[in-house]
Length: 331
Length: 49
Image 1 (cartoon, each protein chain N blue to C red):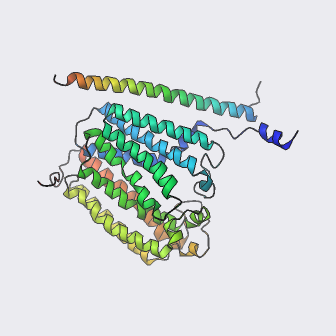
Image 2 (cartoon, one colour):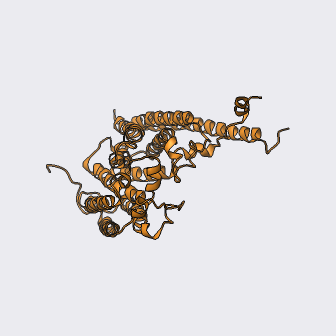
Image 3 (tube, rainbow over the protein chains, first blue to last red):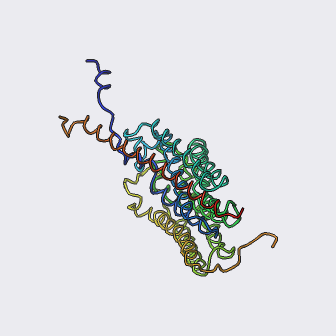
């Protein structure tokens, strides 16, 4: 029997249904659902609860569809990085074509159902977000520019706006403020992570900021973004969105964020890896001592964003009055 | 009878799991569209003429 024939009868690794679920990046999906729900609730528009659940489901499925498209396209570079090499496509359990088909199907179904259940604006914004993540970020930006996660971060920032639009059919300034907070949060969050995973990014030739501009420049840029993010995080309290509790959480959280970013800027986190010494840790949190300021900011950034949106959500659920009336231009 | 440890058996089991997931997803979609239709019809029925 020829070698070719032997290879052809070896069964491919069998994909289990869990592999298809993993293609949808459930952890990212949970953050998307959470921020979208906050946007929906902050719209303060009465909505049929069934349609609200369906709207959130559509956003979750749309996020999952775009994640599957991302994994289908990035299988070659995912295979080179420790954090991503066990994903279903690079590990050979799911064919890239199957992942792509799943992504396209889920994207189409989620947008169509969103249009049917809510309104055209929400469906259009969902379609735009999927396109932005799967094409603009994944195909055009990720391998081309160190600004990849800055511009591409818009896709991750839009869910609160989609949630808001699904409830109200509008996209007012308050919704865009929530988008802006996530948009400015994304670079310090991902760059802190990339400071201690840059070896993997370099191996995969992904032009992340520490790989292209070096760790020192990245640390300075993280601090700069944090200085813009902290006051913006407080702004919802003065624009008719947040109450006193939100103001306190955003002020304390923002101060903590800036303090950790300043500590990181003063550190040498990422320098060892830039010198060619590799961090052999498999975990995102168990890192070398020199990388701890980066790891601490990465971990705190998740807590910070979660706290802001959770406080907005809780205040709205408890019907806590916002500090100010909704801000209206020209009023 | 299939050997439970054989690759064929594992592949068949995995395929069965995928098929069940696909059937459940399609069924869920049909149910959701039905419920959305009822909710929309209810909203329209309640609106003033």
